[in-house]
Image 1: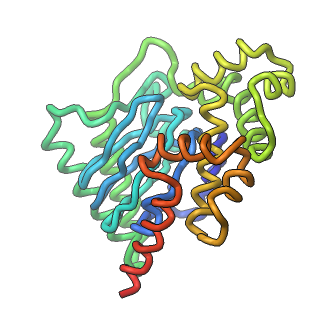
Image 2: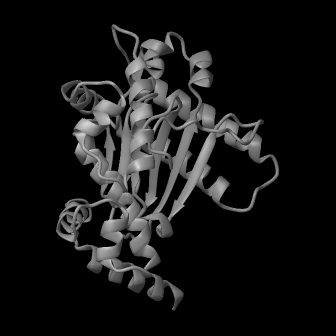
Length: 290
């Protein structure tokens, strides 16, 4: 997944949604901080996701967890290996909700208020039906079924998980600052292997180091170099899974100044050394082939 402003392409013209089914093979995938105009629902059907962050607030998911991500909210995820992970992501276009829900630009969805347990169970049931419908072989009238489920879930979320703000919330979809940071994230993505510094990045975009740091902290909840580290660790994770290169070579290839700094950054996220992570992944693949 792109970790800048993600432009979502809706493939099914009859159903104005995008959905992604996740399985155990993706349980170790790191989704770096990103945002998009679409509203997003994350549903954990089984297993768990250790760290799912929405606007700097961290969530740990378990079977039945529903997370709602508003338009333009920065979100990311990373987790250790989970052998029984099954999850669903549904993305609904901003324009679709804007037509359905009055004054939608002032509305914001909140996550799982505990007092609505009956309604939450109803929402879980709808999402489970949606999950099985898109996971299995397509049935007759699948599009009709998915649209019926979509309207049901929007009704429940709007009635029980939507609040009105005094100022326009969803207009931040077009927030100039988010557009500005998108360019900087793209630059980091393309140059993570080089010797990057706050000064260098600030100069590249004609900003003071203080302005750049505030921009990152305000929009991502991270320092500039912490984000650079995340990008590098994400790239290193892919190389570790491939298992063909040494830890030192991977550290150099993704831009860390030395193996020690790579090891510390990796352990901060995955709570184990790169080598142990690599061995654990190999064992996981071997066990699943039995």
